[in-house]
Amino acid sequence: MTRNVISVTHDFGHLKRIGIGASWFVKVMGGTKEEQEIAYAAGLLHDIVRPASEKVCHAEASAKESEKILSKLRLDKDTKNLIVQAIKDHRLPVKWVSPLHQSVYLADKILEQMGAFVAFRRCYYVGECQDYKGVEMEEAFRKHFAYRMDRIKKTDFPKSVRRLLDYQWKWLQDFSVLLNKREPWAVRMSSHMFEAAMKRIHLEDAIRSYKPDSKDAERYRKEAMDYLEGKKFGEFEKLVNP
Ligand SMILES: [Fe+2]
Ligand SMILES: [Fe+2]
Image (cartoon, rainbow, N blue to C red; front, side, top):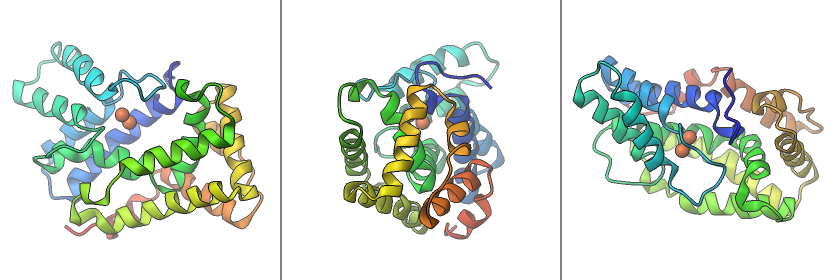
């Protein structure tokens, strides 16, 4: 698998999962087969320019780079524009015009920036993020979780995905509270991911090698692994109102 040497949390594994996730959101929100395919392509390209920092708008940069790549493909102009639009608007809320337009945002936020998986992914990201160099590890976790949670407003999501959003949000919220309380298992788990980032161990391998030391730790690991293995979509579908 191709590895993003700049940001492991945004390597091909992430791009592929967002392709699958964006396409899935379009499907469950009633989009056509063609729209699902366009969302898949947008997901694959959405973080193609992704430094390990929040100081630049990587969505703009990825959209520009995607335009260059797409110009070499025999695709009609409208399709290319739809792909680029979904990439450009995946980072921050805008006035989305369709499920396809919002699909990359939905997959990125609901599937990878919430849920049990984010507890692992975010702690790894903090370890590789340039913005936290020199900041004490637990302090960096608390700061980054707070920064991210602050930026997500439930009102930025369509009502049809609200129950799924609540389900995924709870994992994130609970873990954030545990980190703030310095719950020992949560601190050990986050340290494991932080250290994996220092050693540049692949994200998925780092989760696989994590040894849960409490019931809750095991619950988080199982949920994250089930998501990574694509086992959650059936359950997620029941949480979406068409
Ligand atoms: Fe992104
Ligand atoms: Fe992303």
